[in-house]
Image (cartoon, rainbow, N blue to C red; front, side, top):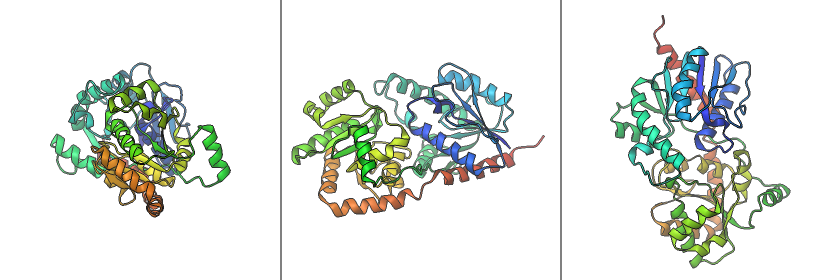
Amino acid sequence: MRIGIEAQRIGRPKKHGMDIVAIETLRSLQKLDTKNEYVVFVKPDEDSHLIKSTSNMEVVVEGPGPYPIWEQVYLPKAAKKYGVDLLHCTGNTAPLSCPVPLILTLHDIIYLEKLHFDKGTLYQRFGNLYRRLVVPKILPHCKAILTVSNFERDRITQFLGLPQGRIETLYNGVGSHFQPVANEQEREAIRKKFNLPEHYLFFLGNTDPKKNVIGVLKALSIYFKQFPSDLKLVMPDYNREHLQSLLQEVGDPSLEKRIQLVGYIPNQELPGIYSLAECSLYPSLRESFGIPILEAMGSGTPVITSTTSSMPEVAGDAALLVDPHQPEAIAAALARLMQDAALRNSLRAKGLERAKEFSWDQTASQLLTIYDRVYSSLPRS
């Protein structure tokens, strides 16, 4: 079988969520599958050759232009040109007209539930509009539709009125490099490299409203007024101007001195940042999975996350769960965690075990079964 995999965005220099899923899945497929051939379609970018071509996996860099044009024009042409038997689109959308059988990973349908044209960056808003237009049209043509949690599977099924069993769950994993950093010299090197405070909380979010930055900042404002300490908040990938506007909205500009912006941190360097943190804050409003929950757990860091959407499913009993709409609840959970060493140690131990339950090799192995099933069901000419 010759399998095409769309991984268009993995070449961009700043990689997030779906990029990491595609990269890690490809690496595991490369390692586990010696039977099939793969053609990976990548959009030209700074890091397009991150996945190296091997005897069973050819990486093809095709076509310029914005990703909707790449996806709707270049991708179907490339799938036909390279003679793939299946095309697996990994990032929510796919060509409206595809010359080969299609498998889609539909990570979420947040953009269908509620579209905020006035929230997030222009790129995020445009992406949401594109997904809103494309996704409902391509689902009927997919031979298999995958999503990343049982919560999201049920949500998609209910929201779009699909038959039970039409969507199947394929859990994400967590990279094997997410391990606690115990060596003191290594810890000090990490602290020095990123100029990290002695005691800090870690918040890995972005400008998407669902990440609940406002809720986190309000919670910290409450916490620091009640419990003076030297704790700081480390936030990657934010610019100071944006942070200042958020703090004005929160009504506590003085909180800025408690926040350290460290720029973009590559995924391979995140374990050290997690390991040195007192706690990882991830009280999102809505997630389809929540990989940072497992990244923190694998790094031996206690986690505070949400009672909503997929997060309880991913976290299990290995995190403190809070109502993300209530900053007071986030602040109270943080106070409880910081004052209770036994609780911190318990969550660290539970988190390490929980993270072991999710691996990219397991994801890739299940995906191979799906590829075989879909291919076997196709009519033979």
